[in-house]
Amino acid sequence: MGLREHVPIGIMRELHRWAAHLMVITVWLHMYRVFLTGSYKPPREFNWNVGVILLVLTLLLSFTGYLLPWDQLAVWAITVGTNMARATPFLGHEGPGAALLSIGGLDFVHAGDDVRFGLLAGRFVGEGALLRFYVLHCVGIPLAAATLMAIHFWRVRKDGGISGPL
Amino acid sequence: MGQWIKDFADFLADPIIYFVGSAVGLAAFLIFRKTLTKPIVITGFFLLSTGFLVFAWDDPNFHKIITKGDNIPILMLLGSVVFFTWLAMRRAVINDERTERGEPTLEGELAKQKVFTWPDLVYTEFICIILFTAFLVVWSIIVEAPLEEPAATARTPNPSKAPWYFLGLQELLVYFDPWLAGVLLPGFIIVGLMAIPYVDTNPKGNGYYTYKERPFAVWFFAIGFVLFWVSFVILGTFLRGPNWSFFGPFEYWDLHKLEPMVNVDLSTFFWVGALDRPRPDNPFIRELPGLLLLGGYFVVGPFILAKTICKSLFDQMGMWRYHVMMHLLLWFGLIPLKMFARWVFNLKYFVGMPEYFFNI
Ligand code: HEM
Image (cartoon, rainbow over all chains, first blue to last red; front, side, top):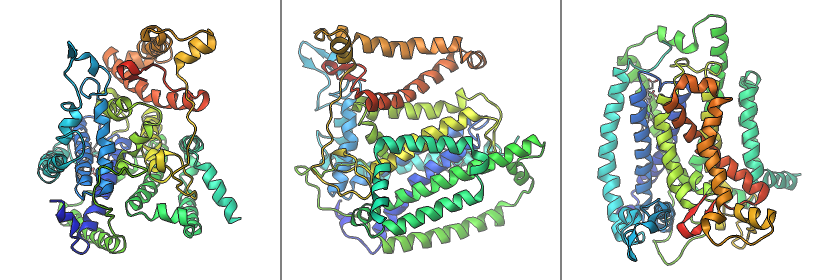
């Protein structure tokens, strides 16, 4: 699975990586322009929210893809990123409140069942995480994002086309 | 001369000077927008930047960090954010003047000239796609995508950085614990973005650039996006090295550079510093000053503001909208407050309860 990325076919890896970076930047700039033109105002509130979800999905798409080369850069970037989940209030084993969720010394939230474990399918970034991220990157998130993009474009038309002075 | 410029650039890049400088720059741009949105200003900016790049190119440390494959898009991010901020404000200034004279906005003029999707739009899109693909191909031939050694969980690289688009959050880790920097604050960003259309009830400025009709909104987003998001990404990418220590653009990434950390909790300031006695054992009594301070900030603050300077806002927005917005803004405001408290007083935590992983 990781092998796919280890066999660069000419410039395919480059095309994919640089375009992915540009997609993140483009989505940020798009949001910036939509904000500064006030295009989230009625009747476009709904589409702005679809956009925010698309923004999150774009970042997740990029984040899951970052792991797939399975090199030092990838694994440690994802380790740093997912370490945060440990500290989720109540749901991460180093988060505030997690210690309260225990009965008679039996912890409900520990390193083997907290949200970080759920993200990584393990206590550290290993095979399970690679499989999980691969499926999310290639199937799950693209399907969700494509559906939302369709809704996004449909709403642009339905809300009276691109915004302009009323 | 060359060395002097490099030293000066390293000096300017120091996190505090960098942040305060960017803040002052952004504020100056918004305030003096009439002058600073002249074409000569942006031309000058890009000429100077190019000149600086050419000058700095030979420096081994600078060269290494600037030409890293993954860092090239960040340079593009910097350039495009500067350019589009300039462009948006330029159009806003022009629109504001036109509105004052009773003329339609630039976007209003445009809306009058309708064109067809087919062939006009599709044709333009087609050309753009081809040009963009050509650009991407050339870029990909010139710059190779990085591939480091195979993953080894036993060897931690230093620095370990999150992907670049999360470096703003990693930068917050300097000031906040992970449950805030990595979980709560990002959560508030997403919720806050979603809330924007519902808390901003100003009907003006819909569909065109303007400053005068919504100054608060413009300041808010410029500060949030440009100053706290983009500028932190740039700081994290180019100026943070091993151990997340700060390194100037011309500085060598020395693994052994250590920045002394002598940060002190608010509770120590209060009990030991002001009352000259040991800190109480009970964490809740010990942290009472911080808890009261933050309680005042989050719980009492919005009510006082509603009665005083934000009275008209409160009346106009209604109770629920007002409180949702205020709380989101107060969380946002906590970031610069903590940063300044750290810089000025070496403050570690307002409330530090490691017993419960509850540190703010
Ligand atoms: C995968 C990410 C996204 C894609 C592919 C996408 C695509 C588009 C396109 C093609 C348009 C019409 C042209 C334009 O206004 O530029 C549009 C409009 C719009 N987008 Fe997005 N977008 C994305 C993310 C976002 C985000 C992050 C936001 C805001 C948080 C957003 C909010 C909007 C709104 C409110 C409009 C209507 C603007 C208007 O009518 O002027 N979108 N989007």
